[in-house]
Length: 362
Picture 1 (cartoon, one colour):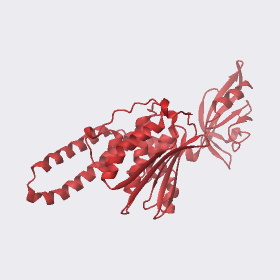
Picture 2 (tube, helix red, strand yellow; picture 1 turned 60 degrees about the horizontal axis):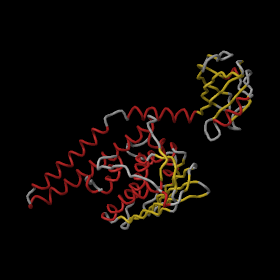
Picture 3 (cartoon, helix red, strand yellow; picture 1 turned 90 degrees about the horizontal axis):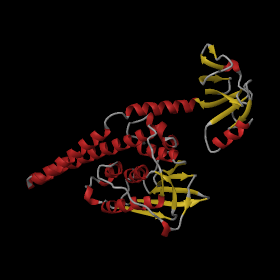
Picture 4 (cartoon, helix red, strand yellow; picture 1 turned 135 degrees about the vertical axis):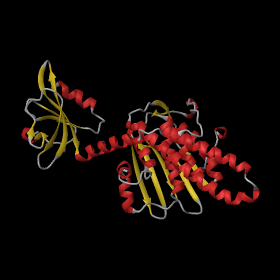
């Protein structure tokens, strides 16, 4: 069947589980050896008591359960040279179906006007700034405690809503991409973070060891990495807080890691955080939001997020991209940094740990 060659090309790098069968539901090609070699017709159900009638003449979504494997199937009839040739079957495991359902639920929760919430929070900070100027000296000490707590809560809201907006972009498939230097984008972000980190007594280092040109979205990239930098700061109760960001290539992969000397993550929580979207969906609304944003960036641009940690010593989050594009000599780089403002998503995320800052501080 000529269609097999087309499918091999189409799904060569896909993680989807695909079966191409003949008209009798015997597999002619499978993208995964764990998939069944023969689909038993009596195990294909529309409902608990209703079996799918063969032959299938239009795309049908159904359940498959042979006692060992359970899948949600999308069965589409295919033809070759004008004649029925079999069926193209997409398989989703129960876990994958649950994951899609979680994303759908999360998308519904993100339909609020997040931008309005952020700007209202920013306006409250402006009021606090004005109030600071008119407070009498003898009242200043008492007021400063209130002022500090109010700002901290507002910045937390702004950071959380920024991340909700980031997630809504991924869930809505609203991500554009361009071929850019990931190395230059990281360098620009580091230059904006470093002075604020130093002002807060945060030892921040960024080592860029490769000039790599690849498909990316600069704004989404900044939001993802800013979350990792912010987590490194927030989850560190030590007197000397350190964060090391590294970018390098390894076996043609592009690797970006963020390492801190913080509190570390307990083993039971670390295992759950390997899938931050699932952890986020079952826990506090603000928990693991930043990790979920970073994970979704990786998934969108052909990468994978991994976390390693030792309690009381360090945490290292790694973004590994398997399709790096081209490594180009530094002297040929061309890149224009996007305009950034205090209330953009990156600014709100960083503000959570480094405080609110004005547009003219860039």
